[in-house]
Length: 189
View 1 (tube, rainbow, N blue to C red):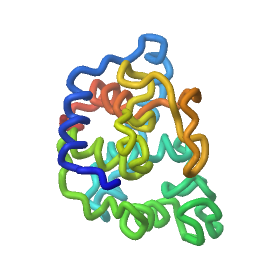
View 2: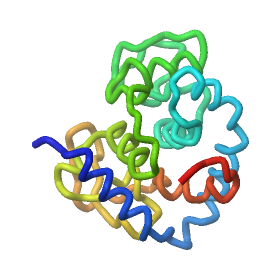
View 3: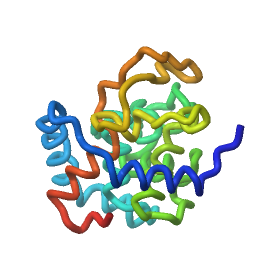
View 4: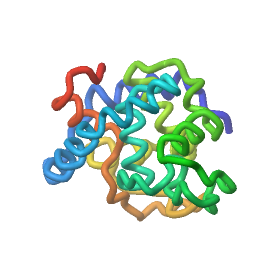
């Protein structure tokens, strides 16, 4: 089943406009948001090479590797070795930045070729980055919506294996972006 990205972008914008962060997540979200914003200069190096907004790169980094500078943006594997997880056989790379550029330019969904950096468009790119399985089921992606009232339960626990009872315990990209915007007004909505 093909996902209509225009409709997904509209749905993500509508969710963004009405979503509320669960209060019990605020402390961890603020801690992570501060860390990501404090690393802005490093993310801007990759932004310059890819034309992807630094805040989008930052939330991908958080979701894929808990902001580990030793891990690839592509899948969280060490960037100084050949990757074993999807996308496999990438690297080794000379630096975190080189690995990040490779992940964003060469690897699906080829994020550097995306052009809609409105909030709905950015959230749709982030959803594509993790996979469109949730959109195919008509469900909000926990990759995007965890820690908000837009997501409750259901998660792919491994590639291709959806567990309707699993709960995502990571911070979602939308919640992170909302908290980051409070710290850095240059992050446009």
